Image (cartoon, rainbow, N blue to C red):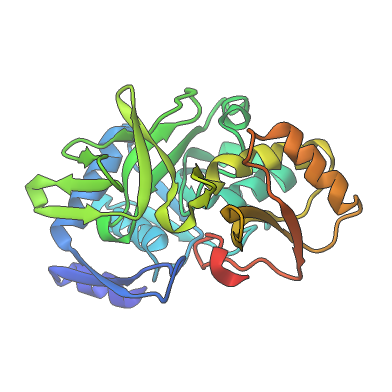
Length: 315
């Protein structure tokens, strides 16, 4: 952290940051100072912030935590660091914060264990992974003093390039000013004023004045010609598990199949009380035709990157 601050104060024009390693080995990405400045100002303007204090509970050597430190330097505001964990605010916290960034898993733990601490934050940015609940879940949260935002971005763009206000029940991501997008294949991001062009591995679809992310091309399950995006069906399974009081972590993966090419399978951390056939039957009733996992696999541990993304290729 001290090294980042020294470089920033000295006027360093380029910074190196490691990717999360969600789909492969982490690699170094170079980010220009101008891109970091643009990102910080764009976020401040979009959220209409009067920055006072940032709460950082993500690693500063990864994009999410790094950008919180950079924002504090650019905005000239205080920043308080918490131990990066799934429950970073479990200890007593008496201060209020203008902004914090959380992974969906961190936010879920906050909702379950210490929901009263939500009022500590004026704005919460959710990033680092897909939402693990249906949009209706987030839309129905009662957050009288907190604005909840879903974000989309990547290491190459320094931070988010689009935001979705869940508190206002928005159902699509809106690009930040100066950002243009191409949806012809996987999503392409352009920031002409900084000569930035990033071709992502994400499938997206335009909607109204924004867009929705369908999932990574690496994760798409091509089952008999039907393309299944795990991130679209996982929130429905999460909703079902909640109704059945199944607390286990899970995700949807793919497996080779001689008849369909690929089929979805359900990976669950630790054994469940219900029979596997019963769970699969319940999921089959809830999901669209052909989208339900064909088998269920119990694993001792689901692996995540430091920024909270599921490593789908672990099993």
